[in-house]
Image: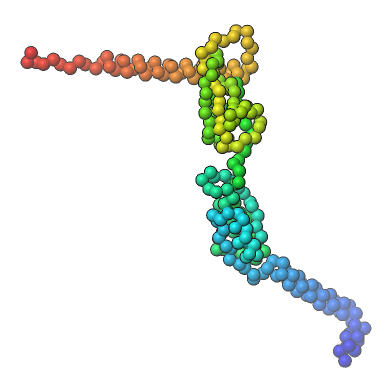
Length: 238
């Protein structure tokens, strides 16, 4: 009977039948889509995120994978006081609840110190060179004075005991030694210096002159103050 009913309905009302068929098909597609979304988004399937902070990377990975989580290293920094490869932080945070398909992003302590390109340090003032190295993160920097007519000018750079060209990538933990002129030798009047070197020498001389002027002013002020101090009165009984 049902077959004859639908056959008669289709024959007598073809437009309504097609419209009904379209509606039924649309509802079926929507239902299937919702089911697939639940499957692919793990709807209702939440897990507690384990705490892997302060664990070595291999141990953290073992814990996450055993719980069914994916993981990625999102960032790394270097701290000498922490063992390389240690997990510093994680996202999402420990003990939060997330879907089982969520990726856990790890920030670890780098296995190697950060490396940067060594800037051009020769032919500039030692003050400027030290400032540049400090801004780049270098901490182990020393200064050696060498015979030269150019006082305060960086003449050579050594990294861990070897001369290194500017632009070479070196660890920020490297030992940097700057060879700086002592100004004790006579200047060769025939030598032509680059403009940048002349600018650096002028800056060094200007700062030295300012320091000497301040020292003289301070000494004169102290001398004037001491001369103005009255002598103690003599004993009136004498």
